[in-house]
Image 1 (cartoon, rainbow, N blue to C red):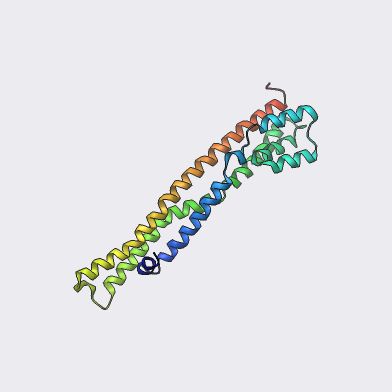
Image 2: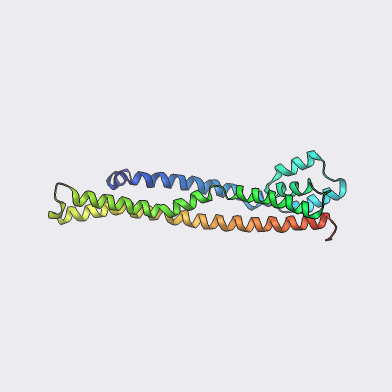
Length: 201
C-alpha cells in the first residue's frame, strides 16, 4: 500500500488527508446523529405530564435543556409558557434554528470532501502525466514504461473516486436524517404549544 502511495506521487497525500478527515467525520456524525439521542421517544408525553402535575421550575428547565436537542427546544418554549402562544412559538422557532444548525455541523465539510476528491484525483493524474511526458528519459520511446507511468498516474483518480463515493453517500444520508429529525422536532414542538395552551387534548 505504501509503495502505491509513493508511486502515485505527492498529490496523493492530499487525498490521503481528505480520506482521514472523511472517515473521522462519518464516525463522529454517525455517533452524534442517533435518533434516540436527538428526539427521544416519549419525551413530549413526559414533559406534558410533568407540566400538568407540578409545572416547571428553573432546575427542571435546566434538566430538560440538557436532556437532548428536542428537550432544548421544549425548554425554550416552556420558559415562555406564561406568554402568548405566538411568543412561545417564536421562542421554540429560535431554539429550533440553533438546534438544526448544531445537527448540521461538519456536514458541509463532508460534502466538500465528496465534491473535491475527484478533482484532487484528476489533479494528481494530470501532474503525473506531465511528469511522464516531460521527463528527460524520453518515456515515449518505451511503450511499456509509458503504460506503467500512465497506470501509476491514474492511481490518483481511482483513489479520489474511492474517497468521493462513500463520502457522498454518507453526506446524503446524514442530510436526509437531519431534515427528518428537524421536521419531527417541529411537529412535536407544535403539539407542545397546543397542549400547553389547551387547544389540543
